[in-house]
Length: 556
Image (tube, rainbow, N blue to C red; front, side):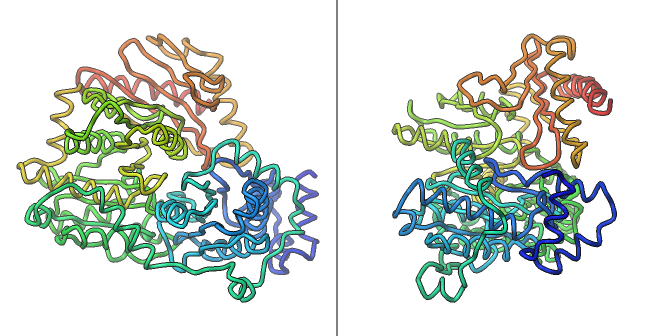
């Protein structure tokens, strides 16, 4: 069906709620109708993610039911009766309709005989990954759109290892979904699901167990050193509120305050333009409070508490760290503190759009480095592969503010990240240094790295076509895109033992690189700059020259 036919089908079919049909009937903007119905919301390795609303290309209970039915059929087909005994775990964050979508997911699964451990409260994404492993489930779902603006929500599917599903599973689930008539999806009655033992509610007890597993990664520091660190923490209205504070108290980071207005778990995110710790504006309230309190560090976690942003007090000014800088600092800290435990089996994992600084640090300590595509599911998959070989995981991270130390989960973990950053800051403060000072020391040792990611938002059908044309043009240009390019890697061809992906990477004679990649979860095209120059001034100039070229092609 074309978008008009789909629109008429949804508007007139009594399967859809009367209020939803009335909303569709009231639409007059043809572009809005087209955007809601020109395609079905796509299920991929990131599950579903989209704008909330009624329509085939929107996040709503109908698409949630259809996706859950497809996932349930896949699980039963793959695991047989085991799927009906081990079941899945389901969690949700603070976003609008997350709780309702989680319940829809659970009751759809129950209709197929798949038992569900359903969280009774807002939960962090890494907690869901941990829960799948803890209960030995065959899969899991967390309802979240991570750090996206308030109008979005999403649905992430996990495999039996606690890792987000890979390409093969996503394709198989997609086939099940596409074969299903959305009007034929069914839910089990909640009371019946409870009575049959298919729906089991879980909550604070499991969250505390998760926090205790996170705390096993802590390094030894005295109570005095920890208490001396002054922290301002903000959960940005999200799921980090309880587990991060529980961890601070357990670990003795008692000298902290929270941004009270941002501790209200609210899917409208009323105090920020976007609840994304990658964006400086998201930390403004926390930094203002930190200045007033003369705190040492600001820690911010995103709505589902899998990403962490930080700002460090340097002589009264708060310096924001990007994801590459924090990742490199954590790599150095963790490997240094565990130096005696490192051996030929030790490894770390990073993505191909993550700076080389952390990798260079790891290699200097004899730690193997594995690269993978963007997305922590790929880091988790390599973790699982290497752990099965008997190798020892040290750290995994990506430039988009996601970090993992330890094997309690197979996803990025901002509860763990908050603990490690606080510990690292306290460790250096005891030596009379800030994290800015420690970073400068690493630059002196390993060279200067300037890393930045610029995103261009291009929404709707026209935006998707524009993103496609930009990537096509960049491929045509190749080495002619800019001066000094010595090599171009097109990951859509399947290279470096990495699965095919729509990523281009331009390498320069200076040792710098630039990567271009359409986002898999947002209507954006992203450009990643990894500038390697003798000093900051030259690096900034190189970045500005490259960015002017990128702007030219994006805005053409």
